Length: 123
Length: 107
Image 1 (cartoon, each protein chain N blue to C red):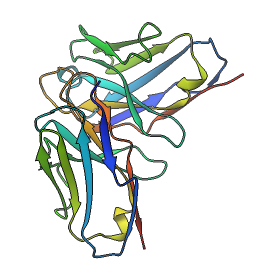
Image 2 (cartoon, rainbow over the protein chains, first blue to last red; image 1 turned 180 degrees about the vertical axis):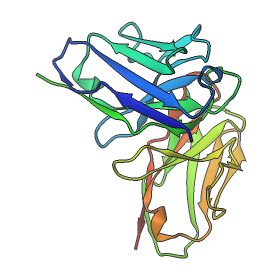
Image 3 (cartoon, helix red, strand yellow; image 1 turned 90 degrees about the vertical axis):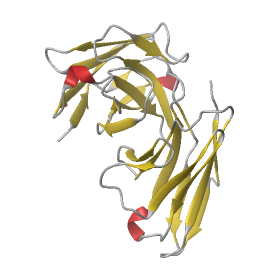
Image 4 (cartoon, one colour; image 1 turned 60 degrees about the vertical axis):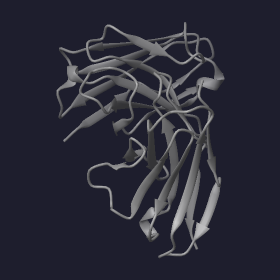
């Protein structure tokens, strides 16, 4: 059974930093790209960032480019997102999601999701 | 970025009704469209990918159609468990975008 478990979300002040983790199990981890998708309170879904299965290619939404860095450790089956210069508008539940292709590339639908971790940016 | 527009924003229907949600893309996305169901406090769940392919374990009352810029999600016979918000998502590019959601309520 595919499982994705996010952690690391909590209250942080504007301008602060946070690192989220996504621990994966139940599938051949390095075969699949992984993305982060966020959902602000009461709002819709927004793709934030993704990393290919090999970890060599990363992509970012314009809203986070230059502030967030995604990475993965295939020896530990974990994906990270380092979030710097946080703003109030980054407040959201952050989900990690497995891309639906065995190519390991980005640019697909998301066939499995974690339960999410809440990031609150407030003074 | 490709903009995705869903309609209606909300709909209310009776158990057993046929329900249709529409999703329009700002440019052609071929058949690279997925549909998700999200219940309050839960993660989204994949229902349909490639516009019309049902994900494993999804009830057959759900179906998808369309190509290019216009797509539909149909629930053939609405069930109480279908009360949720539904999102479409394009994956014609790396920069995936979602519709704003359609909340389905049971009368």
